[in-house]
Length: 524
Image 1 (cartoon, rainbow, N blue to C red):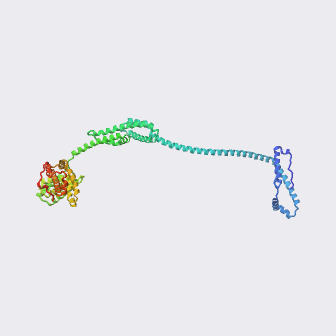
Image 2: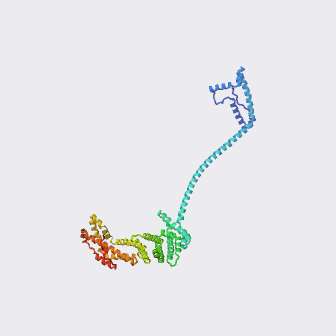
Image 3: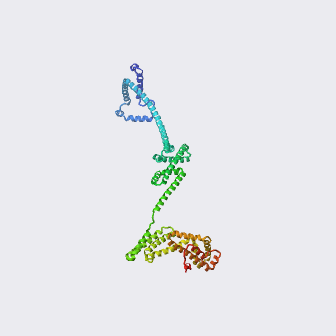
């Protein structure tokens, strides 16, 4: 294809320099359009084959080939048509030069605006990046401030509690020093003071320096409080000592203010012990006077005497007017009363005291029944038999504390002699000799006083004392018989000092107790 030169026109038709520049640009564009391939590119063999193959597919080319048209002539015709259309296109383009120039200016203006917007958007993007960094910094700073705030609130809460528990307000000082201890506000402040003293003492163990600022004030308040509480409690205790006092009033006051003593117990142990001793001493005297007065006003419970009098009267009537049913009922009543005496006697811890109680009651029943009925009646015989048995038990029981080695020697001698254990009996002789080496007269006096004190009725105590000494002499008589009948024991007894039976009887007769001659015969 032939290359045509650029299209030229008069500058006066364009008007101004700007229109000329637009024309030149349009001519360059037109020149580029005239070539099938850009000028800066070279055709390769493959490209040419591809281009030929593509052109052969064109319908105009196929039509020309089928009609046997001369290709060169046909090409010139096509070239002429193209030049005509090209010139027409250029003329249209030149005619629209102003519009194209305006479009170019608008596009340039848009480019500037877009460039400005791009610059602005880039600045905005940079600002957003800076703002994002600042936001992240602020978030981090806010998290730090939040942690600091929580830590400070925690420290503030604990520190506030410590300060509140440690600080002594002026109102507390005024109430404790000026207000009476019976007021409710004083009790409330006393609880608070006790808590503060305990708290400061605990903190002082941890070397808290702040405790030193309040220790002096708390100590003065403690001393003042102890003085007021001591005076109040002692005053209430001394009210017990006044005669005709309603003791429930001060007791209720002390009970209502029991925290006063608890405070003294934790603050000053010596003052608390003093108040405790004073209270125990005062109340001990008060209750002693109470029970002493009660005991003085009490009368004996005369169940046994009333039974004996009732039984004696009914038995007397029954003797004159016999009735089998009445006899049966009285017998049952007697059994129940005797069982009651045994149960009541069982309340005493020691066997000796039990026997004393039973013997005195049996003697009372027998004495009353004898006054109403015959001594040989069935009721009297039953009581006499029981009384005799209990007296025998008492006689053995009263001798044991004084002469138990002697009694054991006489009781077990037959067994030791049959077993041939003479050596053990000889060893017991030394122990028995010590019973009589001292003043055995005092032992007799103790036995006498014990029996007389246990049985106020001389009619009963004298026979019992006689039985006691008779039993003792019987033991001693058997003891001497054993010594004289056995050679080894006789030899061993020659080295110890023992009183003879006559000496003992002389001392016993000083108690004016008559004895029969057959009382001291050996046992069979």
